[in-house]
Length: 471
Image (cartoon, rainbow, N blue to C red):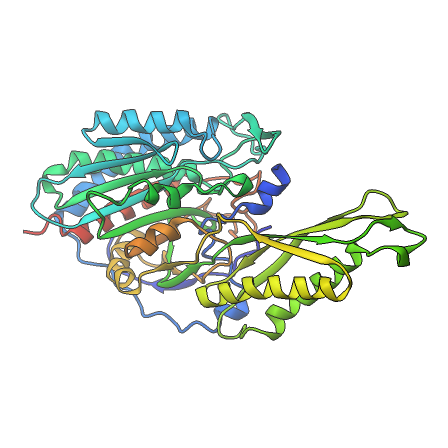
């Protein structure tokens, strides 16, 4: 479930131009994660300094012209990918489409990284410079589309042992199309580009069922940042919480960690009329759920940094007059701080086991191995790139975003090297973003006029970070 985002704050007035189990485990909110902090917590954040647009160079104008020329193709790619969505590690068609495009542009392409991922490289001819990685995620969600579009998804596939509808309900079709267009523009301006650009087309950002490790974490394990290792990494995410043409960012913590846990309570079966003859795991489980809330409310400093511990599922028994042998609970933990993350994980185990033992039962706590760490934008790098975003956004259209308690596996990339992750608005002008269906909704709708600002922002950041176009 998505929280309604608080209103982002204006920072730039710049001159210049199983299916159920899987859905519970989906860690994304996908930096649409960024605008999900409650308004009270937002008030604790110090006001950001005003961001002035960086000075424009001739290369910026040339990149903008090429971006506008590529816009129609970018939208066509987005619609094609939207109509043919693929779930995590199933992005075979999408990956092949992207790989063919990149090879045609002269990129060196390594495919089948983390099953269906791509790593592509372009060396600039404008002189020496840094290695910069750009990332786009390609996977869709097990969500049936409810948007009336001529290119709406009607796809179905098997996931977690069930047939599910498939939809790009989080906007990864946009991310892939934007980076495909960026690849085209950068190749066109290769003579002016300094350093090396590495493109990461990533599968399985929305996580995988049954604890399978994939996505960014697996791409890194399979050498995505090897030979050459990037000096920095940039990524973006389209969000319904901002109007098309608006960009959003924040330094520091931007998205929470996400960990899924299961608690299995073992009791002793008996007839419901004779509870004293057994051990009731449902009663034990209810006690555990109540006690777990005291970890958040009484054992951590929630004023210093927010965190959330939620039990979302509780299953036990199949008849009203039978006390079962066992009950199971499933939930999620979200934090910004690794020390708190480890503390709460430890306390969930200790509290659950001790309560069960005290009530003559036994509890087993397991944490899925494919959780995500919290994601933070490197403060110095973010401050350096904010003028690039301000230049593209224009007066009044760059927003400071509060951190969100949803998660994003870009965190693995930005933990390996300094990173900046920013938001791109895709709600139609004239529509209140607070009323627009959120990312992950079957009614999530993209106003495609928001894609060009996202493309231009990425291109300007590349030019400014690498020092391209500077005499």
